[in-house]
Image (cartoon, rainbow, N blue to C red; front, side):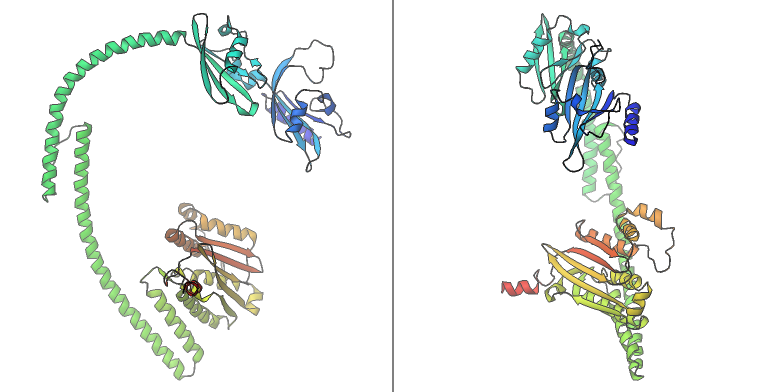
Length: 527
């Protein structure tokens, strides 16, 4: 009964739909007029077998002079209507036949322009179905004296699988017929246009154009003579100005303020000179800024050497005092600082990034009492793979920060596995931890943050403070953007996680070995 009410509501809310009916052979289903009927009522219809042959695909049919299904078996002289019907066999479940769905719409509502009483008087539309039947407003004055059967024969004599046209005559009046296929209905829409008025108008327009052309040619000849002298004068001024610029004079004044192409050319030439002067000033400023940056770089190098030397002294003091844990930590910290501050290139070997990560884990193990374990499954030949500098360290930092975010990892520790494998022309680097993991909701939010547009991201998250032990996704987002900027949109990172079990980050990069373009295994095979 719920389905019946929904079907009734659908039909009443769509006034263009005349009928929505379901014919079923289910013996347990009773007829509920005017929607649900027995399938035996339509078993003898011509289209019934065609609908079954479509196996659930929509079948369109134009039903001519159709009486209502509830009274068509009676002898009442009820008025018949013509419908455009959508018919479809329903299966549920699998391949079990349920019944036939029929949705009817009056043909004058389906083809409103064809049956509209408001026409321009010079054209009219017809519909020809797959059986060759013609449907139109035969009472229109446009078809008076026209034999529609002869029109159909002329149309069938011409190819009409695609859009086509042909002409014919009724008495002394020529007509143009344009045919457009309607594939879903396997029908064609014909637009018959009377050419009587257009032919007369074309003759009048032709004579008017000839007279106007003669007058315009004479007028243009006079105007061209005066414009030529004016334009050439301005072009000479522009040419002389260009010669001065070529000799190095960038302060040329071009006194051409007229409109037109010459005036526009002079305007852009002035803008070009202005831009050239701005670029010269900018180049001078950049050169000065470069010198200043070199001085600052030298100063930073001096400061960095001071830090390195200080760390080295602290390390020696720790060794003297037999504080070897502190000594090892200072060694790792110094290596991390050298790696971070010495940024001569954005691209490094995977081997260098792994060493940096090992130093990071060594320092973090001081905090977590050695409960962090780093495992590597990287073939030797892949250690020469090119990666972006500091692209893996944020991922390891996330694994430590969020992996140790629950009691179990804090007690038992976290194992971080780094794997590398080659797939076709791509290098896949996986970072997996057995820490806290995350829920599907948090994983979805993280993916959304990574791929979100910058403006939308800052609008949504810039004012939200990160909760304790929860990040805002900026680190992963920055890594993804750097990878896509350097290697293209095909590359990036993908995250998989199961709450309480694991988190896996897969980084996809182009396969590029820095030692000659081949891995160790490939080199051995090549030799």
